[in-house]
Length: 499
Image 1 (tube, rainbow, N blue to C red):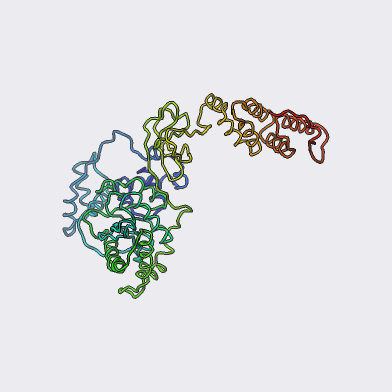
Image 2: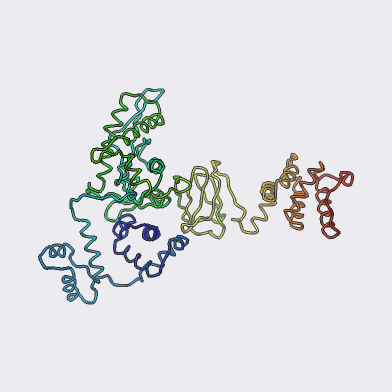
């Protein structure tokens, strides 16, 4: 998904190439190349987002076998540029003269030098455009509540988030720093802010970053959350305290103002603790700040509120991913002990299951191919008929359960009649009548069959014979002169046999 996310950020945000590179793990030069190609091809994110990640990679990947360019000593270039009268163009010309066949262009060299300089230690005052960044971190001091039964302390984690421009603070307690709790804390934070910033800046904890460094690998669920809210994840660089200064100051304030205030109170659940944290948080955000006399809440109203991106209709829901290397021949994959169907055309291919609270979704090549209601029945199967081959589907429908599924799709009156036939002690005794009903649907259509079944129930003679006569009468009326209303009297149907 690196190329996919890079294109999303390039086409939907004003982030620089270096910032996009830090968020996606690609090099700034690669991001710059993608941006140039996207501009040349006049790409629009609405069109690009419909393509699969593999298709997007094919649009931008370079041809294999191209020799690498010779990169000069960037530290030496940086040092020489401190000399009076020395320009980068002059140094580039000398470099090209030495290696004319595999030299970088002037633009490429300038970009590499800029990226190199970004890694050098420096101290500067940072400016924070409204709505651009939110920094997050966990407090080293942990609050606690008391177990009602044992009266022992139960320590929890204190998550703190802050909008860098207005300094509006959010805080909440979570049971742990694990991925589900870390994600849930972000969902609460963005709901509290009422919008999403352009960039999320976490520390390098494992719930956010799988591998830190110049090209960090973002934890999958965290990357999904950012994608859901249209954000970029740009972790603070290791040993660069200036990247997370706002978060560290906010954590210290929360510890001094909120945790100290709560020490004299006693809580017996994390929910009670969070209610108290929320009350104290409003007091902190309403307090005037020393630098301009305005409160964090007032600064938020003036700076960040209108600059934040609107939240999606539904909040992000955490999900676990279950990789399936090969779909078996019965096209059912096991997820937590239950078997769910996928389209039979995927037999032998790899898929991934996304396990949510109430459903299980199947993906192939990052595309949704199946969705099922989540089941806790270990060893049982959940099958969607359209996933089956034609022969399997026909055979499955020749069972009581298959017949009920067909009737449910046909209509409520058809289902009611089918259930009445199958609920006779021995379900298979009602199968012949049900199969005849299905044949009538093929002949007259499910709409006509549903209407005929409802008419039979209205006449209080819900039998197969009644349904046949109603359909026959309807067919006759369709051929003859029009009538004001079609009815079948009980007298006409007297003596009809049951199914």
